[in-house]
Image (cartoon, rainbow, N blue to C red; front, side, top):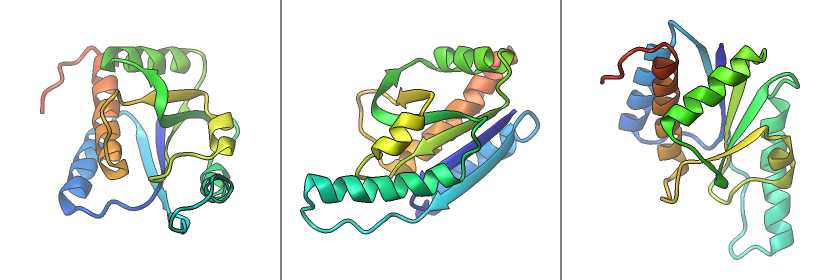
Length: 159
C-alpha cells in the first residue's frame, strides 16, 4: 500500500512537521509514504471569480502532473463526504480488496481546489464542519491514515 500526499504550500511550523514525521515513521512498516509540496500560485488581492478560477486551475495542474492514472485520488474538500475514522478505514480496505494499492490524498491551497482536480477525485473527503488551516489538515490527515491502518489491522490505537 502506498499513500502519496500532494499539497499546495509547505508546512511552516516545526511542531507540525515533527508530528507529520512521527506518523509517517509509524506508517512505514505497513505503507510507503511520500509527500510532494507545490508552491501556491500568487492570488491578486480581491480577485474576480475568473482570475481566482485560473489560479486554482494552475494549482490543480501542478497536482495532477504528479498523479498516476491508476491511482485512487482522495481530495480533501470542505464540501466533501464526512466520514468517521472507522468509515475511512473501511473505505481504504474495500478499495484495497478491489485492487487499489496507491492512494493520493490531495490538499489544495487556501483558496480551495480547481475544477480540474475536483473532476479527477475518486472521493471528496471533508474533515467535518470545523475549519482547519491547510497545514493542520495535513497533520490530521497523517493521524487519520495511521488510525485507519491500525483499525484495518485490528490493532489498538494508542499514542
